[in-house]
Image 1 (cartoon, helix red, strand yellow):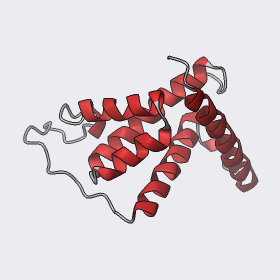
Image 2 (cartoon, rainbow, N blue to C red; image 1 turned 90 degrees about the vertical axis):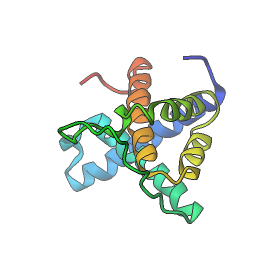
Image 3 (cartoon, helix red, strand yellow; image 1 turned 180 degrees about the vertical axis):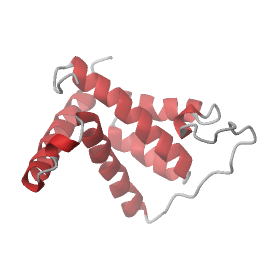
Image 4 (cartoon, rainbow, N blue to C red; image 1 turned 135 degrees about the vertical axis):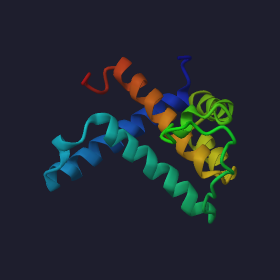
Length: 138
């Protein structure tokens, strides 16, 4: 990844948020029950929810794509109609700021896109944190 001072700061903030979340969970006796990635998913989800709440909007679902898989269990981030938008949002998160990417996602008012962005962002942040040895390999 290209070095981005904003990204460095946001990763530090995510590390602190992860540590705080783990502390709270340890006090409740649940820290060992959740893998690191799930804790990260929760932290990023809280950041997204903050932006949704502050915008005063509640995302609505986009119309269902016409070509649904037969099993109906395909994750939204695999939807070919959403992939370009999701990648654009992830690029914003890694080249500008996480807050800008979240704001752009929330502005779309598309719950499926926000969910897909959340999932892909967590995957990429998790890989970045592993590469930086900020999280332990499972």
